[in-house]
Length: 35
Length: 164
Image 1 (cartoon, chains in turn purple, cyan):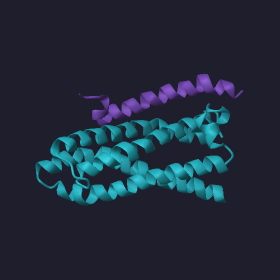
Image 2 (image 1 turned 180 degrees about the vertical axis):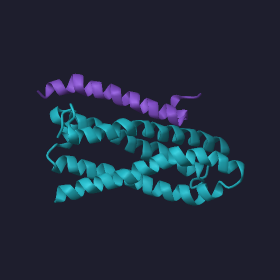
Image 3 (image 1 turned 135 degrees about the vertical axis):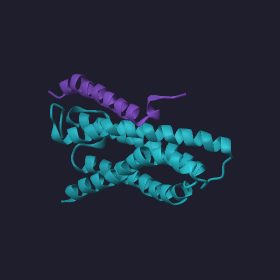
């Protein structure tokens, strides 16, 4: 079964999407606990 | 001075690790099928890949150990990082991603690559399965390296994220 990770482009795009998701997770759910 | 050296060693080992990861994914995985097609793959599988894997797996372990040392001695705390507490949240995300990647290297990639490269004996069906597992684990690490690098850098620089 083919996955996005089978291509280099799919791998990089998946990594970028994960980066954005984790960024918003940190900013919205973790940063608020600091201040 | 001790922390500067630890930080430098962490980044140095990380470059070796991720540099080889990108070599495997962007160069070797693309070139190997072409090399197999004209019967020139042996040079890669017998000589280049084992040497690259040697540096790859030990650099991965060194990166993690020195990173953990730096977190602890630098005053952030390994526990705070992994619990994503306060100002350790961003670097903690990077630490989690790096830990998952280290697991993939030593538990999924290396044992399966040993079968693929013939370091450990295996039949053709086992080799094919091992190659697929190693490939997907390696691609997963390439994907995870993108946010890992982002949060490692952001952990130091701030830019809207809680920094050290």
